[in-house]
Image 1 (cartoon, helix red, strand yellow):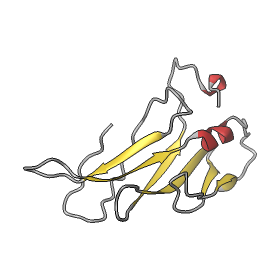
Image 2: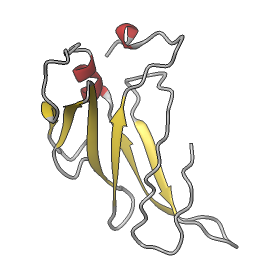
Image 3: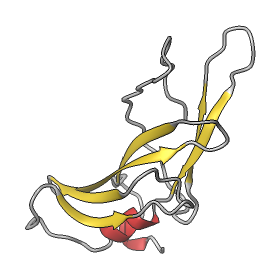
Length: 133
């Protein structure tokens, strides 16, 4: 998938919502960041990966609506292997679990990307109950 282009900035903010179909939860989601060139090939600005397994472990807990908004369900430490710049938390909000994370871009001098993930069931899909971690 591709996001839109953010022009004329060194610190782009996409603020876009993308819906991905996950076929294999054991395969990380690979992100690549490019600049946009008019007359030449777009330059790679770095890449990162999202490991969704810790998030899916939280979903499989089948939490009830008795939790208060903002409750931390799980903390994921930055360990140098998971692309996290800092600790990331799975948070309970309005009956859903979300995870916001700041990922360090690799293969570039510096840079990071902030993403938030949320599971949404697609009608007619197998659903989370059949996902094996």
